[in-house]
Image (cartoon, rainbow, N blue to C red; front, side, top):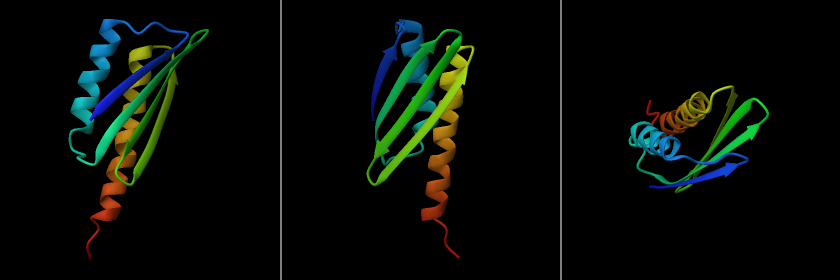
Length: 96
């Protein structure tokens, strides 16, 4: 799984980078079809936005969050993407 981090109007520090790598490994380890994760961080005045794009074999999931704290935005965006991935997996594995 490759993780790409992009910053718009914000500098990506080592602490943010480490937080993103740790969080993505913990949340997306259960999904083997995930090949590529793109995270775009944006700063507009006081709003810190994080957008997570998860791509893989026959899947495309997006999660976006905007709060006053960058770390909270990253966590919420990853949780939204993880929730969508779980829903897709349950759809595929739904055996009656």
